[in-house]
Image 1 (cartoon, one colour):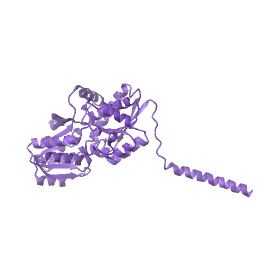
Image 2: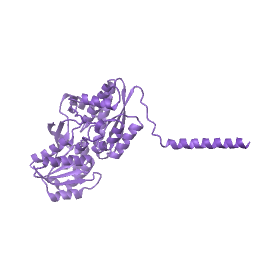
Image 3: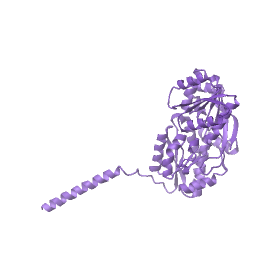
Image 4: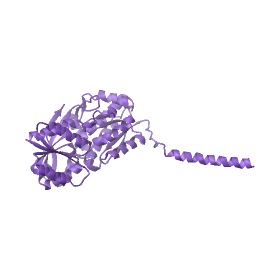
Length: 397
């Protein structure tokens, strides 16, 4: 009897221990990954649909939806429909990384469009490379991304800021500037493009100061007062929509509209005109640059389809993200699988004079776009509305 009771007590302890171990193990298991239905291809997309790049990101998201809908209407990828997983990184690289982890570890995504900002692409890149996830960025333009050790699976349909920096510098020189201040936000994109502008001005104009700022601030009067004291002929500004609106309103109040300002792709678009004072400042004194499409049949067809679907015009990087989705779909179809190495090989083959809506796209062996097109733009007031208009289209090689 004693033996029987002891044995039963032993079995009870063993069962309790087994239960505890199973509970403890649950906390260490990765999240259950979604399995794709047999007739489905998962496509992840991480964009900045809120935060500093929100106005731009929302329009780019619509371009992704348009591309996916068109591909699915034509039969999908080898007969499989695309299922789109769209995530908002709120213009924050850490949020972008968390979104990437969710898409890969929970949703089972192996194909990704993003990151939108250079900081997001840089932060997500090592994680995605380790897991062999193909990523095409339509707008991460920082030169720093070239040649990174984790770059094998990252492609870019946007031109590097090596080109944009030269063009911004040339605008300042063409305007007769001898003394220039570079005002750039303190992140991967801002510093990268700012350095390219500085290089392009060497021996041609004096760079009085390279002022870096926190793009999340709400007051830039100290930086602007410094610029006023330096009294340059021109200011080359690298920023985003949200900080740009504040800077231009405060610059107008400080009388800095008397000097020339050169903007970039980050301060382009209708989102800038949400602040009337910023819009007024831009119309008075600003020229700018952005990657752009040549006016050809492919772009016009895309523009009309976008406008018909969303009742608005596409803006900066809508063309390059539309191209990114289509290139990835074609590469996946050619590879016959979602294997990253096979898709990479297919992208390098397809991406040789590919007829995109953003112009002819050729990838180098590192996944960067070779050359491209840039627009020189200005802001004009038409009636009671402001808009960015093209002054000139420049092809860079």
